[in-house]
Image (tube, rainbow, N blue to C red; front, side):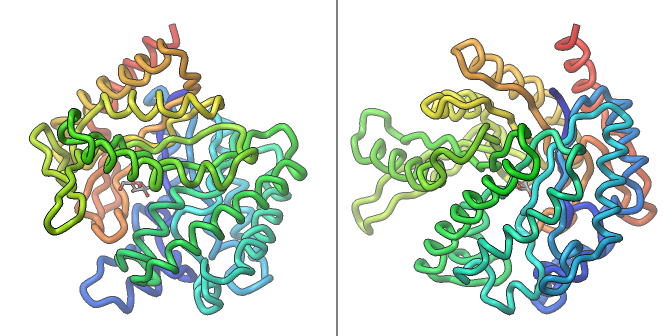
Length: 385
Ligand code: BGC
């Protein structure tokens, strides 16, 4: 399967009941998602483009705050909208990946303590059940939670995202509750839509020691790897049918004795518009590391900000080769979804970072296919021969 991924808040526009929307209005100088890419109204056009570009699968997310704008009150129209969206993908013959939580929450949940509230996993489950009942038959792959570790660190430790907290204990609690939410949702989805694989999308970083011969650098890489990459797997053991891999970069680590800490070193190779290292071999590395879990894998995100599209074609080729290298060593990778189909609202970075295979003109909402999207199309055609 080859395709692309998006998430609701980043492309739909006007998610007025979410915590992100509230945060955007109140945080000074914060980018505002506004209309985003107006995908809520233009999804048919966008999917037709994806189809014309040879895609065979597509990943969307459902916006909880649209489905349940106030506690226990369901918005039937919003639910029907997502049914239409998935039916359109079905009609075009694209496999559907559906994410149930992609960083945003209903604002009312925040008023109840959001992911620090021990009741939140059950509240999430109530929403998951409702959605699953209404989307049964239209979903090929369920993704409960997108990047739980990223969410917990950005929102509860780095204070970059709502609710803007800087508390180690909060972050740890959120990781635990998200794992619990996943485990409960896994059972619900198994019951309501039997036979449909359920997993989560995990952001994985390839950590490498600056000096391979140096024990402390190696330890730093091991520690980060244990915490950020693998902790969530141990908390959810036995409750995922596949692994969703979101891979963006590699980090070199060095340990400092005075003051004691470990540093993420600057990258000397090629980078994206956001300065993220471009390191395709890191994708092979993380995929090989996942062999220990013995599950099928989908690359559920991989991509870069590249407004002028000068690096995306090579990026795609090199990362797909990196996937093949892992496959050749026995890793069961079943699909690749590029981030993203469209330029979109890149959270705290606003609209500057351009991740789309398709460029969006935010004034006119016009779509323009970037040249690299055709390179991807040729790769897909070749692979399907
Ligand atoms: C997230 C996306 C985001 C992308 C690029 C991933 O961590 O799931 O929402 O746009 O990275 O930053």
